[in-house]
Image (cartoon, rainbow, N blue to C red; front, side):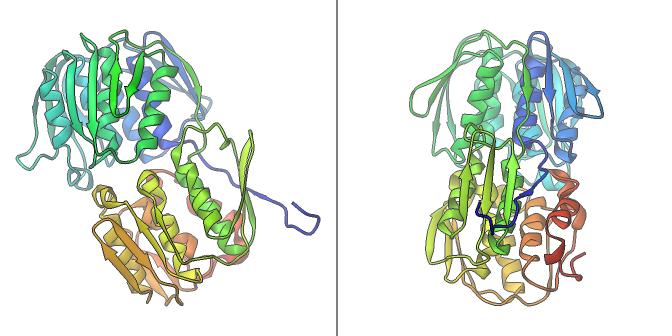
Length: 424
């Protein structure tokens, strides 16, 4: 930073949802008591925590949720009951394999939004491994698991719909009776699988990938661990994008070169768009010019949770931006490609859409109300555009609580001079 440069704004980003929920599950399966420091406290993680409690796991909150202490079962759960997953896709994809690795009869249910998301590939995988699994005829929730443990062995899995199916089965692998050899085809969002593997090893699991796409686990179980949860890289993307379009500097401490989160690679996309990025052992900092460079195509398939961040600010670029490789984003909290295109067109922005891509052309934005579709990422992404485009409102301001209840307050704190009075 030069003498004339403005000081960096320190963004207060809560813990990673992906890390928090994976760590909760692994701690629940481990032998001994684990401590998770700085967990994300949001609708999704609280729903996941409550679901684990319903499976018989004891979790204590310490120091105002600064740490969660998890008394591990050392195995899968036993018993029976109904597990409410709320809106949390990770709960619906991670907890059934955990339950199937135990002994009992469990029914997994969720909201209408979660029920619209498929679980058929997961159900079929668990059947192959020895569980009795039933879903609705269209392969959706409710999902019922009746099991006396999982056998292990060889399993093939289609990974093109969601990497969460693979992560869920992998995390149950060390709890099975025999080694698991899992071959996955057409895997999307590979960085999330790498995160899963790293955390499994952190909790003492033996898991490998000697051949690309072929994962092996040993039935040695997990041991307790102490883990500090990194700030959420997906959430940080909104504040990094805000820096890029406002010509300011934003730093997120704790997101560093050693981060387990693939979504930190969103900063590389911002570099293509003209921002300056600095990564150290302690933090990541983005400095913007206030202008965006367009005229490029980028594959965001591996960091698809951040594609909306780029799409929402793309109208400010000096040329069209095409984002591809994101077909699986249609199966998230909303059809995210369709939702982004709908809102951009409502803003008066020319947008071209394909099955796995979207092209956004630059242009002035007309005042409009953003249709959030109860999707936190739609709300947060278009809130960033509201720093530069007047008259943007949200039809569901509160849906950000899924991952960051204090999002609007933090954006206002960091960028008070940019917030149009019409944003609500």
